[in-house]
Image 1: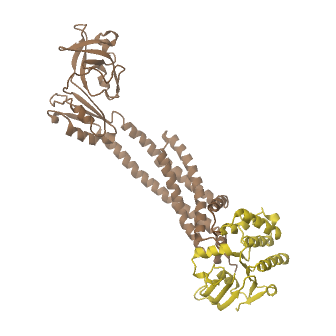
Image 2 (image 1 turned 90 degrees about the horizontal axis):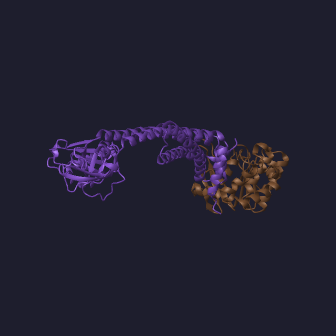
Image 3 (image 1 turned 45 degrees about the vertical axis):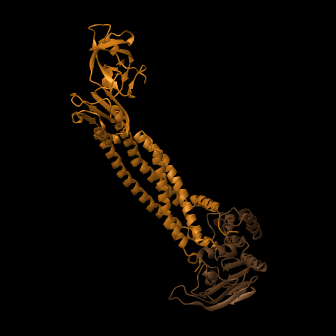
Length: 367
Length: 214
């Protein structure tokens, strides 16, 4: 015999205290559910909305760095592609030469189109069923409708310009941010050359400033000072601002609600303890240790808190989905539920300690 | 179990009158001792002191020779759970639970096997005429029945010590008879039974009487 109640006693007792008296239980559930919903309705909705904004900022356009040698004075080498591609945070790097006018070889004096030598693998935003990694030098892809405007039957055929020739083997279509290339013919070069534009896509808008700095240090050019580097650093700054402002606002809101839960649950549990001093005194007389009394109070408070937080979680997710058209993240939901439960449990500790310190003799003696 | 107090004295506050004033006494196993005396002499207080719920201002309390008030609170609580049955002046039942659950509450804290305790509880409730009230809550039974339920709770863990504080003070004669008979039987079965009572007539039926001075 251990003279110690088993764990299931506390579970059974908590289930019993959940029903009787029900007023403190109901108040606890109301407090926890209300506070949980409040967090979802404030921080949760803000998080979901601002995450959507950050996702938009983090689009391919927002993550693009454009390096230009528009006046042709910088001597930007195509060797820069390999160097830039190895920088941490770079998703892809792709460059084009200045344009040459090409026409169909079989139609002397025919229509012309701008042809550019391309360096680096075609980025994901340029799609072509004909392009493969094994495209041979002087093979070319034409933008949508370009082959037809050149007079190439079936969209394929030889093109030439200034004593150079190539073969259009198919079509490509460029999506933003490189959609300006759709009017061109892209030609696989046979040797390194000079770049007019170099586009670098980073994996996150937050990496833009660091990658831009790295580019300035690593680009291979005769006169790097003549290069123009354009980037959406404002977007990167905005993303950082949103994240940090959201962080500050969330911490304040959640802290205030946790403190409120702590105080209100403490008050409710104090009332519950005050209303059951006879039971506590009797149990002490029957052999309950102070620890057993503390556990009984905490177990009863935990059950109410679990029901309250669970109710608040379901209602909070529904509110967020309706208001922000996006569900809060699982991590956020788990964090809120855990913090709320712990705040309620912490709030129940002072009343539990008070209950364990009650003097059974003062309670049970009949004057 | 042999219980003894020596040079016992207690004050509820520093400016309160002392009670017991050096009381020394032995309570033997298998004996029902009635503690009597005028109001305020400390009958109930003596029970609470020996039951380890109240520390005396001075003097010692021993259980089988062990100075039990020197133990930690948790150890004293476990001793109560394991060895003591207590019948209070009013039943002090949990109003939200059934009579049977009230009886079994004592078994939980003693760490008894609940199935075994339930059988014992039903036997006791049958014996004391409250078996048909097993599923009723205390608000649905009479005062006499409530005290019999409290008696079942005190005896369910077959304690070696039974304290009763004015157990028949609020009862009709028939119920009082049942309670006193049960306490006497517990003593016959080997328990140390100490009953605080102001009922001199009842006290004289006890094997031993301890009279406290005012």
